[in-house]
Length: 273
Image 1 (cartoon, rainbow, N blue to C red):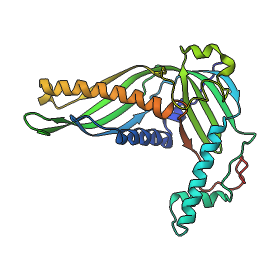
Image 2 (cartoon, rainbow, N blue to C red):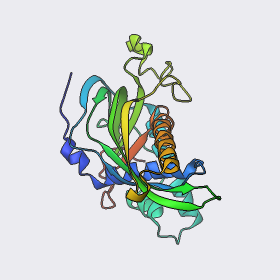
Image 3 (cartoon, one colour):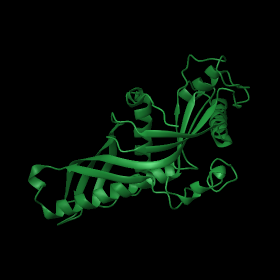
Image 4 (cartoon, rainbow, N blue to C red):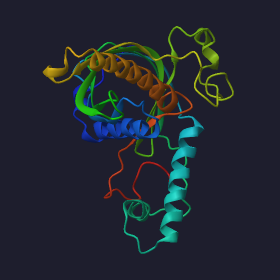
């Protein structure tokens, strides 16, 4: 069954765009950069105005992993509050405002999970800034500011989307060409080959296509050494973006968006004891 989504609302959601940008930048700071680049960061993430084609496969209750993740986060927040009761930081405020004692979230009748087939060939884009380092004739001889735009991203995958405790969880499960899909009954079996995996499937690729355009100062556009480094950086970015999706967003990892507002109270739909 196919259905439409309010893509315009999603693309204009500042919290969603900020979360994706922060997640990407967090990943970039965790990797070792090659010697020819410095200060690599995501400057802008845009969802684009062309939504994916989404086909609903199944509707079920959320898997237990999502509840465990929320409860673990709440427990950590409670411990931080106990250790620093005078600290009025965000984490402590959030726990106090929710009125949580035992820090446990249980399944609610309003929780829902969708298994969907998602095919995307839209105009999503990611703007990246960096410094191209020239190590000749000496190490770090020159640093050139450059801007790269990642676009024409295409993928066709099976995804898991869950709504619970005012949070949205999103995870890539596998490519639609994966032979594991021939065993439909085992897709959402928590003891099956997909959800029981402790690491992303080695064969999952997620991204089927993408392109990168690079802006560099006109005075360097004919410089062979600069162009060579630009080509290496573009290939590096492609590989790291694919690694990010496989390691950080593909099951058993996910990206989640917290829609909890401080003014919310114990009248929340979820049962919190």
